[in-house]
Image (tube, rainbow, N blue to C red; front, side, top):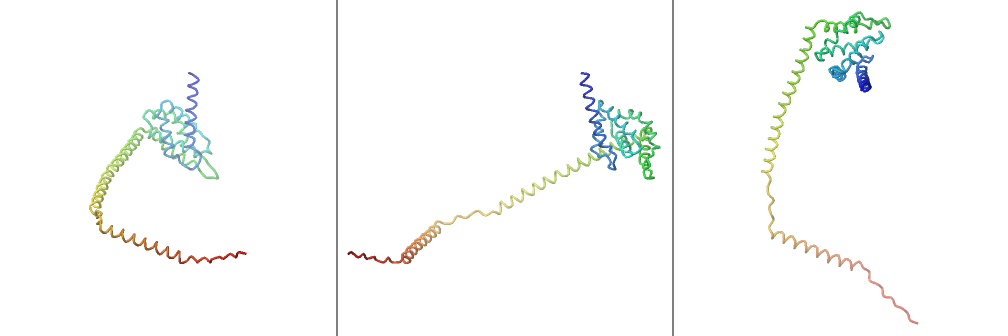
Length: 230
């Protein structure tokens, strides 16, 4: 049992590391919405939230060269504070000393200050962790946004349904009109049919006679051969 628990924990750790590292790579691309929602799903589970927090803690303590990765880890922390469960918020109190340090983060490359992004974002996250009223406002605004989006979707679907019914009714009316306009096929009288058949038969007979005459005309007469008897 103990070995199974270790194996399960190691699998969860690998899974969380892969998702978070893909979302917090040291490049200019921001983490996608799908990646952030996947991290939130992991963090909302009681078994996996400790692993997610450990991976984020390591990401916030990276070297100054990887300032973009540190910035992305701060983005993930901010997203979890606003979109995660209520039970996650007190667990981020352990992050306070590290985020406080990042407010004075410096990363100079080619005589350019690259740490400004990290300093601004760490200041925003620091306000969310320390100021609970501001955090509640952000969370309430997020819930209102989700409710409004759901209402818009439902109204859009309800409006689209009657249109389809009207179209179906109009199509049925058109089909009925077409069916009324159709004229029934009039049967031809028998006399006409008999006359036509006689004319056709006479034409066939005449053609046959002409063919026979032509055949005999074209055939050359055979010369009679005389055999001499000695």
